[in-house]
Length: 311
Image (cartoon, rainbow, N blue to C red; front, side, top):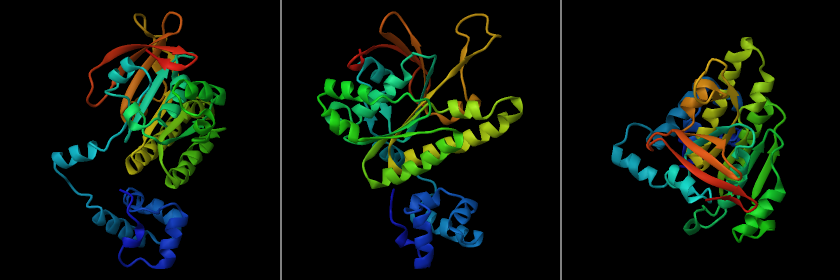
């Protein structure tokens, strides 16, 4: 997936250097971009960019493939345990790599706690439900707490100091900053062994930056680009994307639960797995799988305790 761009025929050293400086340092990143993007980022002409993209696609054999080939690729997918067997079961074995998992719910439903738990459990070896990898945490609501990481790591038998060093945190102050941080995350991923990218929360800065109906189209367009970028990172580097999302109340719903997730159809279509979290009695939380390409709808009950997420 991450073959070097030196393999491209007829591309000079200066152009190679420009592309690497702009972050296009593997064939997939070039093949997945448009000529306009590549041209704007590197300063090369659109025609040249088109030729380079075509060459990268040819190298990667990006045409059609059989269902058997797709199955073989899917066998490379890893899963990160949530540390609750029932919640893992609902998700088909944990949070998948090469996918965006979105959890939405009201304040206190456990979205951020689960984000912390995954940032720790991704560091576990494969036989214990992790991927032996590191995590990136983009924090848009000041929810990240290193103390929480310490408690969770100790409970799993991971050295808390080491656990904290394996989580890269950045605070996003608005939606533009959030988009830039996602792009910067790619530099950290390339340095090695990042297996999880958390955005907590995905929609809050978009919501505060774009108020009023007149700005909705711009907001959704920007959110769409952001989500496509996150999905590309997940595919290219075989890592898991976990995003949290807020909910709003719909006054026209008279029966049942009136809350709906923010982000509309764009987030609905782009997230691979969608889970609705809600509070139950005491430390219990209920997770409801709303959307998945291959799993049935269902519910799981888990607990949030000092040690983290548990059955």
